Length: 404
Image (cartoon, rainbow, N blue to C red; front, top):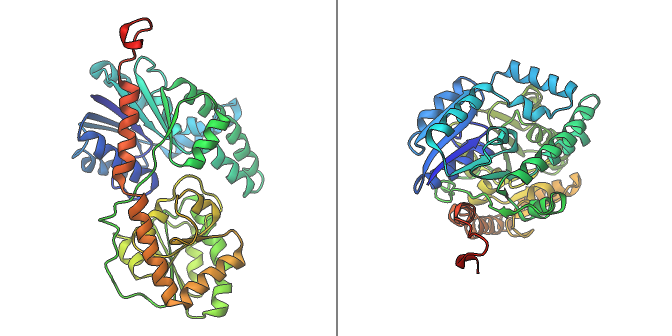
C-alpha cells in the first residue's frame, strides 16, 4: 500500500515525545508499505536530519518553518478569528509539495500526526485519512491559560476555543481518529461524539532503555525533557522552588539533575541554586538515568503519555510523578510509580525513596516490570495495523452478497 505520513517535525532522531512516536510508526509501516513522509523543520539545521529518515521512508519532503513568518501568521490569525496554531504551521511550500506528490503518486492512505498539520491533508477527501490526535491539544491550551498571566492567559483561552473547533472539524471529516490513552479516548468520545476513534498507545524501546548497572550517585534525583517546552519549564521550576527545599531540609546532600536540550533562561537560572545541575544537550540520557536513584515528573500541565516516564520506568528507576503525568500510564500507583499533586507529599515520597534503599530497589524492579508488561512497541503498532486495515479495506456495496 502507498501511504503519505504527515507530521509536525522531522521525525529523526527520535529524541522528543512526538518524534519518538512518529519515528517508530514510520519504521514499522515502511516495512510493509511504500511510505512518503511530509513534515516541517524546526530550522534549516533540522533538515540535516532528513538523510537518517531515508533509511526507512521511500521519500521525505521537509520544509523549514520560518519563526518570524510563523509568528506573523499567528498574530494575523489572532486578529481575524482563526486558530493561531493552524496559522503558525501553514507553510505554503509544504502545501504545494504534497499537492504535487498526491497527483503524481495517488496514495491509498494519509496518516497525519498532530492536528496542527491536518491542514496538509484536509482537502484530500477522496482517500482514507487517519488523524492521530494523540491527545486533544485544545485541552493543553486550557492548561496553559490556567497557569498564565494576562495577556497570555487571554490568548491561550482564545486558542483553546478556536483550536477545539478545528479539532472537531478535522475529526468529523477524516476517516478515523487515534488517541494514545484510555483517558483521552473517554474525553474524545464525550466531546466529539459519533466519530470513530481508536486507542494506539506509545511504547518504549525496551532493549535500548535498559539499566546498565552503573553505580548510583547517592541521593540523586533526575528529570529529563526538552527544556524550552512550557510544561517542562513549569515542572522543574515548581519542583526546585516548592519541593526540593523540603527534601534538602531532610537530606542536605541531595542533588537534582535537569537533563535536556535547549534550556531557557528560567531553567538555566535554576543551576545557581544549591544542588541543581542543568546539563543542556547531552548525547545520551541513559547514563544520567542509570546513575540516578529517583526520577521525578512534577508536570502540572500534562496530557497523554509522557515518554520521559516510560523511559525512566524502562531504566528501572522508581518514579514520583504528578497525577497528570501518572494518569497517562496504565501502571497502578505503587507499581514503580507514586503520584501526588501536593508539594509536601511529593517531597515526602522522594525523601522516603532516597532514605530507604530496600524500598527503592523494590520499586525499581516493579518499574522495569511495568514497562516490559505494558509498553513494548509491538503491541501498540499491531493496533495501528488493525486500524489501517479497517480504514482501507473495501466496503461492501449495500444490497450485494458481501453486505448480506
